Image (tube, rainbow, N blue to C red; front, side):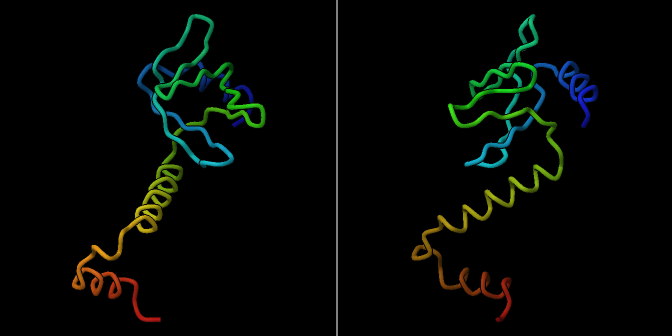
Length: 108
């Protein structure tokens, strides 16, 4: 997206629109626009304020708003699925379900 396309996209945003930004440590994040000020600042439901589509996270990092694409949604779903598997208490999973999981994964 070039500068003109980006500016047009930012000015087309409305309250309730879903957008995304990517941080170095947490990857892609989806948020919803909560408010747009008369000066064009975009406030999101997670408490961030974006000026010209940019938000300073801390002294080390700043992020840019981006359109929420299907690719980003899929990447987030994959990350959340992976985390669910990693955080599973496998001692509580029944032997039958474990057998089903192994069958899905296939033999190595």
